[in-house]
Amino acid sequence: MVSMIKKQNRDFRDEFFGIEACLLESKEDIEALMNLIKKDRISFGIHFPLRANQWRLRDPQYLSLNDNVRVDSYNYMVNEFQYIRRFKPHYVLLHYPKPVILDDNVDWTNWRFTDDTEYYYASEYS
Image (cartoon, rainbow, N blue to C red; front, side):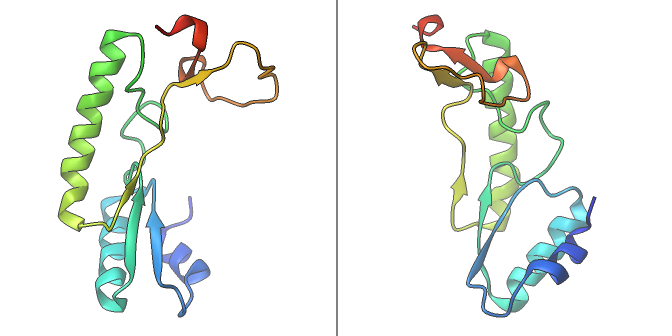
């Protein structure tokens, strides 16, 4: 993995107005980003989640038909939102809906999902 510092040096530009943070690997990477934001007065948002490897997939499955997955997803989201509120992002972008609800009449052959729990067909969802 590319460290946050290497990524900053590679990608950040003087004319940046703001950034959107997502899936940072370590506490040190988050601290480095927050220091940069304060130092350069950069506006920032979060493309949920801020931290990597907190959930088994990229996005919480808060619309799951499985009660345990749905409850675990909400608990994960609450914990992550409580964690990120200290950084006072200008916004948090969250993918909706998760799992994705697919139209039964469309050919989804070329659509890629990491896991078959990331979607339902509309006919499965009440």
